[in-house]
Length: 182
Image (cartoon, rainbow, N blue to C red):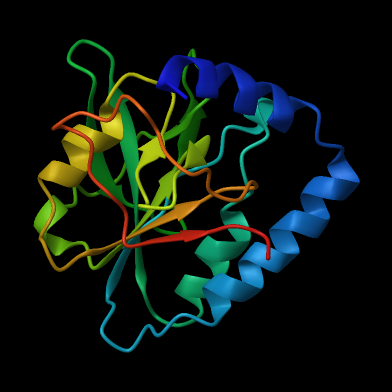
């Protein structure tokens, strides 16, 4: 199936999830994250969830990583060129929700893409080769192409992978792992 159709299907499937079902799925996914080997990880990039799109709540993950002395990095969107800027997310970082419902830092120290060891990536669906379908603007593909080759890329999704995304292109970057409820 092609990306645009997959976006339609999985946005709707996510919309149809009840709050109780989301909590159940998240708990399963959190446990998988808690089981990751963090011994070589210092800086973790975590996307801040868009609640109106029923994305996995990443705040418990942020707390978990902070409690293990990992530095958290979050992003801010540049809507003019569809790129992301990255910032350290400290306890005193102020967040404002942008016009698309994305929480973003307003007073944070800039972070470099090369400093990231582990990157959690939002997605609507992935395939068994770990390619992903996002919202379609290419923010994460551009971001991931600038990261170190040894940075671990992990997708978080409520749904198991499909067989194949038909219209992958040369800009699509496969993830190393996709965590979904087992």
